[in-house]
Image (cartoon, rainbow, N blue to C red; front, side, top):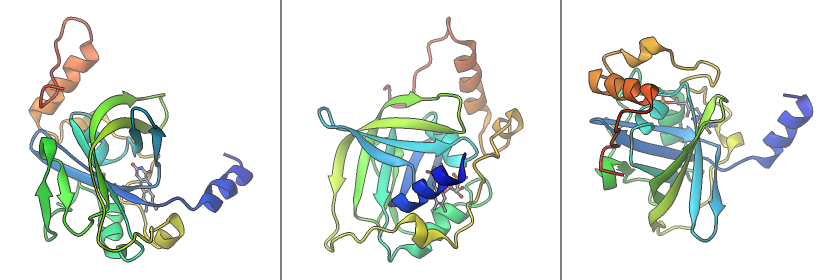
Length: 201
Ligand SMILES: Cc1cc2nc3c(=O)[nH]c(=O)nc-3n(C[C@H](O)[C@H](O)[C@H](O)COP(=O)(O)O)c2cc1C
């Protein structure tokens, strides 16, 4: 990418979210700057997850995604979800959260949020996967949101660099589990397999 493009993107200073999800008994979540409303009628919201992330691997089999809009006061939460990886730690240990539809973790301390039911996945072969969802619930906090932005998180070193994509070895790690590997093999096999997502969607 050119320096000019990098400078343009940085000048946009995008607001940050924590995207959370759950599948196969695992919870996951990471900070994301790549997200936007992408349709008005019907309403759709899109989030791009790095293929390097634990959250990506859990989201592949999830029916729901929660989008928590971070406030500038949420730096500690941003450091937890953006600076650590679910490959190494349980990010939900020690914070209050409530399971939502499809088991998606809703972070109690982050009231400005959308719950998305997954509509489609888009993989163009780049290092991020796009998940497009239908908002089935939305809530706002009692205080007006002062969004945390990319520049506010300059001191947070991402838990995974975007270039470090997963490998087949990751899929056989104990965190993924055999059932996930079986499902991925079914997906890779294509025709002849009926693959039901958890929750029947
Ligand atoms: C400012 C900032 C923006 C980020 N934007 C994204 C993003 O849009 N998509 C993404 O998948 N990861 C993004 N990340 C990286 C993940 O949040 C980070 O690598 C995280 O530790 C991954 O955790 P996981 O392995 O548990 O999923 C961003 C991180 C930071 C600090």
